[in-house]
Length: 292
Image (cartoon, rainbow, N blue to C red; front, side, top):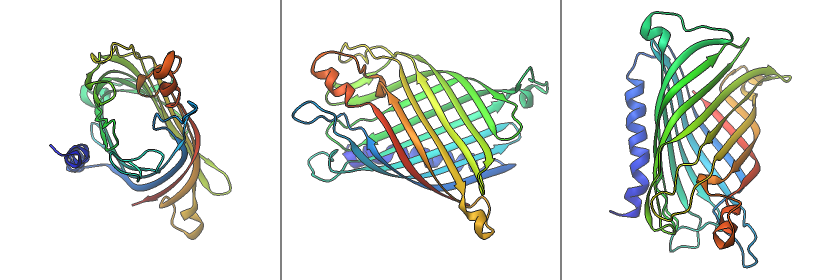
């Protein structure tokens, strides 16, 4: 099977699921095309002195969220292009990646007919989903993960805050780690939020954080993984409202923090430890969104 076929598999799967989700009679929905520029992402690359080499990435995304009688669907596909510091295999131009996410939330109150409210919690849902991706650099990563578990939806004056604890099962491919990696089931904490506010124009503070516990060795290298933390936090401004087109065009800035990326232990000694440290991300980014 060709490398291009591997790259297309996750996006085709995600698009098929998105089409299936759209077949539900949605009570509400929001779809957007987004652009992100992040100047200091990671490719696990070091220079001759062992110092991290930053990789700039341009990212175009299709994002969709909708609500129906029994819950909600969320779908996102990223198409990522690295700069030449992270080259495609056999090339001097930057690598390409696809990464897809799908989440389905089923509200227990809708399924059972009984209220799930208690304290500041307004709903409990069952979350299922997957992540799938591929990259055409020398390492040829092909992550595929599934998750399942409860999510608490908190009552806020405006916006949303959801906190979930899911069982997370991942496989991947890594040339440098000897091929296919089959990881143990791990616990994953997921926090997603969106808080509207006014900054002269309507604005939104939104983002997510995922904390994934150690998931074993991957059955390939014998090297234990470590707890991984990924945080994206953004402030987005509704610039479309300035021309009477509220909720259509947003621009803003964000911050990404990624510790022990993909579970690689940044404190590991030796050469592998140097590469793992090169995977650490702490960077601002720019984001634009067009909603329809």
